[in-house]
Amino acid sequence: MITKSQELTDFEPVYKELNHVFKDYSRRGGAYSSEFTLSTRKHIKYENTDEVLGEDKELNKKISQAVLKHKKLFKQYQRYSIRVFFDTYSDVIYAKIYPIIPVEMDSDDRVFGPLEVHAVPRGGMNKFLLAIVHDIQRNKEKLKWAETDSVAHLSIIVCKDGATFFAGEQRLISLLNFAKRTTWKPAIVSGEPVTIRIKLELDVKYALSNDLDSRKMLENFNKGESFYEKMLSELFQGDYVAWNTYKPKLGKEQMLVSFVYNSNTRKFENPIIHRGETKEAKVLIAFILNQLEGEKIEGYPRPFSRYFFYL
Image (cartoon, rainbow, N blue to C red; front, side, top):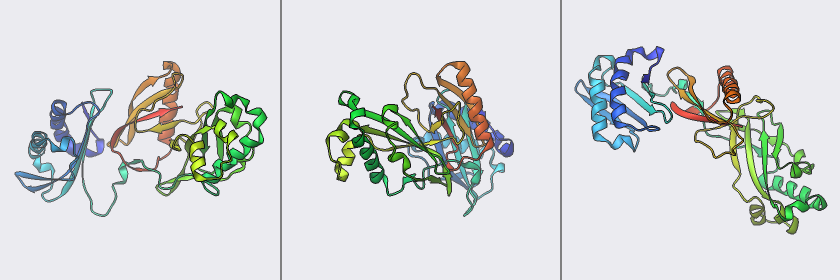
């Protein structure tokens, strides 16, 4: 079924028509977006149509028929946006139609967005990596395990107030006295600071056996590309909850749940437990929904999409 907005009930007849259209033409996980104008009472002009479903002339014809069947709901020459999403994990189709207002931003759809400014350690990332190398080389006797188990996974959680926490290989973290003194500037989204996690994959054995005095050598030390994840601001049972717009690869012991963001109702709904014990996962779901209800998550429009949350 297509979900509808209480605020956009004028378009309810069109949503019912689109429900039948997209059940036949779309696929689970498929999305469609376009802009259109009623140039005449019998013709629709499309603009900025997405490249996948938008190239299907038969689909556009069906959409036009659905709109024109209820053309009295639309103003001639007014530009509208239509967005449709067929949920991957259910038979629900989400749809939204709204007029495009020039200049003004459609703030109702502001949910999650790209980092405008990455979290940055004082002096830059290379200086921070050198601080870790300094701690490693000062503690060679305590790092003999790295001869056989050389790669250490390290996460730095940079809170929106600039506070930092380290997680991952505890045998290394306990020795990072110099690196832990580094101060950080928080990441910025939509002009506001946010909490993120930075994942590093460090070759401890390489740092023990080399004088890392160049950028190239530091790149060899940090074997994986620095990976940034956004986090919810409150802790869940002492741990941060990360989120992403794609299903991440996680260890078997990690919990993973997801929701669809419905931009009509401006709520997260249709929760799915992908991994973890059902009872504990339901507690996590309740926690996430409470967090998302209590604070506005900054970002740019992603009107209908499934978001994945995990520890």
